[in-house]
Each structure stands twice: as structure tokens, then as C-alpha cells.
Length: 218
Image (tube, rainbow, N blue to C red; front, side, top):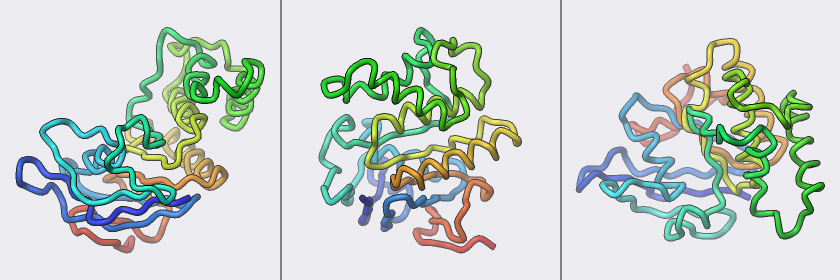
């Protein structure tokens, strides 16, 4: 499974936000896209996900798992997104939030099977036994992990990460980074992360959005 971006560009009216993006990410790999605030990083992810606002337009091609998806609506692209905010449902407990990620599997899995998948996911995140916990009682790092698990339980073909570490303190940031990168490798999901923080890049190279090319970390 892989994702390939070819001449992907987002414009406001007729003005391009960044140079055309050409990149390919294989299963289990992470592409880090770096750039200053306001250069269009989140708009790039929105173009890939199919969630651009009306004033923005995208051109170029997006091929995911061998299928062109740029013409598909957001809910048919099979893409998971992790934002800075956790976006958890406050009226549901932890299990309820994670079961939401399994919604697409309801016809093929029993409730007991889905609850077992939830338990396994929590175990992998060091949160065993948290099924009935109220979302309001969780720490920032715990909410971040639950939010990511919900995205992963939906079995996305691609994971997009929009500066997911920026709202965490330094200690939690490092631990959550490690958890995210491990999940990407273990589940063999291609992932694209946008950030302005070089510490968010575990690779020797990143994609400079404003420059329109791969660059090495000095």
C-alpha cells in the first residue's frame, strides 16, 4: 500500500499556496512536510483528505493503494486524520469513542469482537482497562493516544498528521511521537505529517513545502 502525489497544488483564487508537490510514501513509511506557519501545510492535507474549504481549489493527482482518489468525496477515500485537537466525543466514554472508529466493521463483527479489538488497542497504548473512563478525566497525552487509536481502528489506507504534537508539553510530546511512529511501522500504514518543528522528523530528510523538494536535516 502506498500513496503517490503528482503535481498536487492548492490555490486561493488564482494564487498557488506552494509549489507543486511530487512525492511517494510506501507502507510503514512517514513523510514529514516542513514549512513555516501559513505556508499551506494544513491545506495540503485537506486537499489529500478531500476536505478543502470552498475558497480553495486543488489540482494534481492523488493515487492511494493504486487508485486515483482526488475525485472522490472525503468519506470514500479511506484516509485517517490526526489533528492538533483530539476531537473526541465528550458524551461517550473511551470505549464508545473507539467503537466509533470501528463503525464500518459493524456488519461483519459482533459487539464482543469489536470490544475485544478496543481492549487490544488500549493495551497497545498502555491504557488497558480504560474502556469506561470519562473523556473529561483523561490527560492531554491520554486523549491524544485515544484519538489516534480511533483513527487507526478504522483501518485507513493513509494516515495524515496535522501537527499532532504541538499542544502537548515536552515530555508528553516525546512519548506520543514514539507511539505514533511505532504504530505506523507496525500497522504498515503510509503516513504524512506536517510540522514546523524539526524534532517531529525522525528521518534524515523532510519535504520542504515552500521549496517544493526533499531536503536534508542539518
